[in-house]
Image 1 (cartoon, helix red, strand yellow):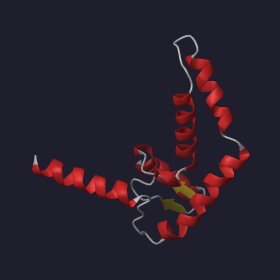
Image 2 (cartoon, helix red, strand yellow):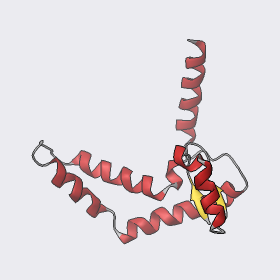
Image 3 (cartoon, rainbow, N blue to C red):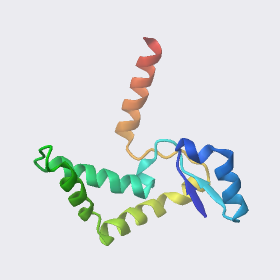
Image 4 (cartoon, one colour):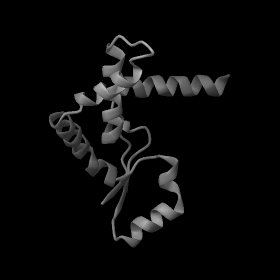
Length: 116
């Protein structure tokens, strides 16, 4: 199975054709579901680690490299377990809202934008 998020490249016909040629089934993640994408979880954890460190311009590269040490096998296992809980709902094309508060804020902002 090949899991696709909503990255623009994933909607390119050549990518879909290649995946199909390799006899993989395709599962598309719902929109706004970065919590299901393990690499996005890794990037988020690294960004949080970087944000906690005192940074000066000479140390930026070193700090970024050090932030990847927070991605341990235990962290990856937790990300993977979390993702697996939602896959059946993705297969059923259910809308998944990870955080209802964020969802309601998004709806309010969207309606506000439409009224402007």
